[in-house]
Image (cartoon, rainbow, N blue to C red; front, top):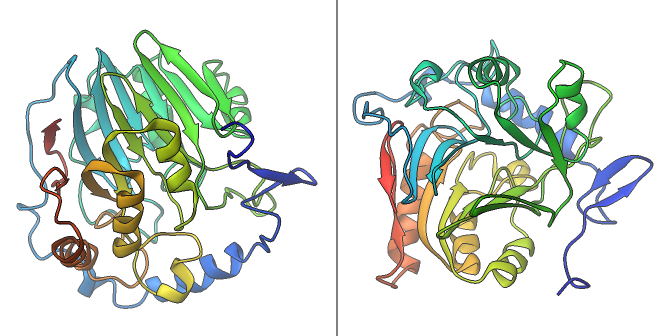
Length: 316
């Protein structure tokens, strides 16, 4: 298995998805960005009450529980640990305010033991949110892709650890594995792909897969081969449009569905939709697409689609 694993390619201190990667990301990102600024008002939700729920927050639990906070931010609680993924609790930028408020505000979170970062784009690696979380949780451990530890060390934070694909760390009865994804990275002007990107498997009483940002690729089958039965997949489903540019770095709803089948997972929880007006999608479009795809492609009664409002807690 070791020899057949996907590896992140690096040359001249720059990461690539594969040796044929030509770094179209800057162009795609810029073009999609310009299109996303058009008609944003028409893409906001018409009613917030059905998409944001306020529920009591569990301080801790042994049984696995997942709460969608918004975008790619989840509170995952398992085996007595509280875990946050890609935390962002405010705007992505002044051009991209939140359309959905966070389902849990930082002040109401339980004590956080681990923060998992998939890559360093600001909507997944939000400096304001991270600094607030570190201040409230001085003992929190932050797991980041290769190349991102320096950001924390520069700010005097010593408890960040960085990972290459397939590297693991275990805390008690929970193991975190950094897994492949097909994406890219950048925070400044001159640091494109100077740090890695990926996804995370959280393994305790069951496997919970957090896909991060990713295009469709062969890594989903490899992840399933590594872990076998995956109980729950937290999968991005947007932006869906403009498709010709988004598909190079993001799965749309139907591609996320196909990846879910290849992962052989049982629960599908959508993310990366509705929180920010990225792409050209109407607010509800990614949910409509995954629901349509699901009705046509998933006949297995053991598989379930869980469309969670922000703040909704799901006990697995």
